[in-house]
Image (cartoon, rainbow, N blue to C red; front, side, top):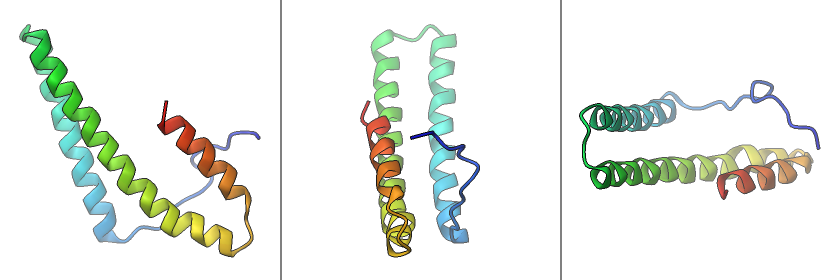
Length: 99
C-alpha cells in the first residue's frame, strides 16, 4: 500500500473544534518552550524529564481525542460510502501511534 500525502485529504471541522485543537497545541508548544528554557538554564535532568513526561501525556491525550473524532467522523463516513480502504489506513495510523 503506497502512502498518501497528508495533503490529499481534508477534514472539515467546526470552528469550535478547530479552536479547541489549536488551543491544546498552543499549550503543548508552551510546555516545549519551557523545557527548552530549562535546558538553557542547566536545570536538573530529573526535572526536565518530568516535564517531558507531561508533554508526552498531553500529546497522547490530544491524539486520543483526534483519533476518536477521526473514527466517528471520517472513518464512519468512508465506510458508509463503501470506501473499505479506510480500514487499512486506520490500522497503519494506529500502528504508527503505538510505536
